[in-house]
Image (cartoon, rainbow, N blue to C red; front, side, top):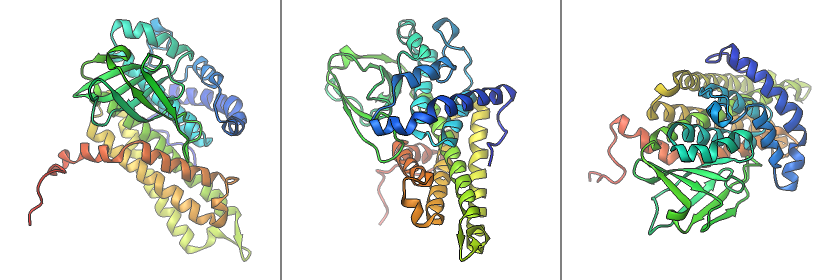
Length: 357
């Protein structure tokens, strides 16, 4: 059940080998212990940065590789999902997108202040969405991945078409750490900003691009999670026997998994097109890929849990954690906002429009 080759090239596959070796050798062995302790150590992110993970889009003059190609970040997400490191992969993905946005749109002062630390792994960045915008100089952000430990957040939707760069250590910023059912290790926090003028820098425009970047990254995680769940389920039904017959031999199992495989392949293809298009991908296409990948991910973990029977509800089996991870991702990506962006492209009237009698 290997990753599809497109849209990746030889450089991406060489990077994949390096990422897989790093994750398998330095992150996966200690992951369960870190989660049991309640925190992923800062060193896990510093070591990733030393491998070029999360900072590849940061310009060389600020300590990065200067390679603004989202396919490299997609490789990281896929390999994290393959090893069941969804939380780690999500933190790295949003860190990478925040760093990419700062490198492209930040002022000279912002780039000099934040990018060197983000590239070295000394600092981490988060992405946040402000629903409703700031009120009377204050701001509330919910479900900020990495928000409990990040140093800076790039905030989408704080004002029309603009982005706020938020210093999470500034006076007046309060963080409330939260626990999540799935995606362990995401360091989620709700963030309250009491004084926007002291804590933030407003950067005009760029919000649609940030939104598209994040949706592209989330779609990669969703499609990779679907493929991983499909693979672990196929392995299980081939090994599991009922009345001396492999579960894989039953017609219902074969039909259900064949249909799921087609759905996962469709998600892979659409996500691959979005990655291949790079900056030419618009908000609508990224939203479509995200919806498709999320649906495939949900279908894969649902069927996987069902075919594992009672064992699917035991944490000793990876499918149970995959199920919880998928549910958290679905909640985090904000499907309502995705649908709102797609509705105009379909010619649908606004949600507040009157309904004929």
